Structure formats: structure tokens, C-alpha cells
Image 1 (cartoon, rainbow, N blue to C red):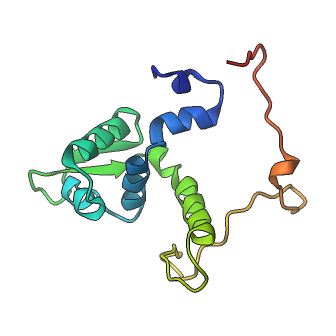
Image 2: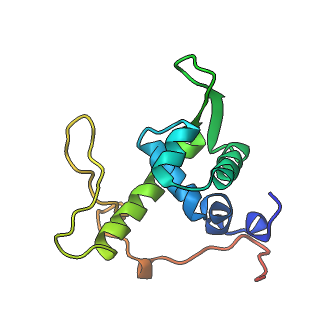
Length: 151
């Protein structure tokens, strides 16, 4: 980690340093949808090969994805989410929910996730207190590390 964001005491800053680029987020979306080859990501995103290569390299270097020989035995490599990368699932679902709620007009079709075992749409992400009450932004506050000084 070398950037100011990467050295921050804020988890959001450190996360944005790794996945805060639109192409990186779209690569993650595609990886969660089952894409793994460079050519698949390139075809899906239409992004320049040098940009895609750089983003994939960054995801591998930060441990979010790994590059390994293609499972089918071809000479290609595949890029797959690591356990660390799989933990970004909730972030991708949250982005989908926000996008569906705020960037589409009423009745406009959009993609969504369903539970592949049941076909039932995923429940909405929601934070709850132990007694089941919804936790809203106004119910939270940051707790800074001891000795923290504002930048």
C-alpha cells in the first residue's frame, strides 16, 4: 500500500484504493456472474485491453483475484475471485440495489440477483440491531482509533 488512501485509518478509504475504479467494479460484477477469462471480461465490458490488463493485475496484486491456468486445460489463464474477493459480494449487491432504486425509471427493466437454488430474488440488504430494528445512518457514528489526527 502506497497511496494516502491506502494508509488511512478509514476502511472506506482503503477499500476505495483497491476497488474504487469503475472498471474494477465492473470486473468484479462480471466475476460474480461467472466470467473468468480476459477475453470474456473484454467482450462484456468493451474496455481497452491495456486498461483491463492493468485492473486485473491490480486485483491480483491486492489479493482480490488470482490468476491461474484455465480449468479446461487450454493455454489461457483465468481470473477468479479469492476468498478476500468473494467478501466484496455485499458491496456489489448494494451497488445493484442503489442503481435499481435510483437510476431506472418506474417500470424500466433491470437485471437483479436471485438465489440460484430457489430462483427467489435476494432479500434487500439491511442492517438491524439485535432486537430487529432497522439501523439507519443517523443511528451510527464513526469511532476513530486512539491517537487519530485529522489529515
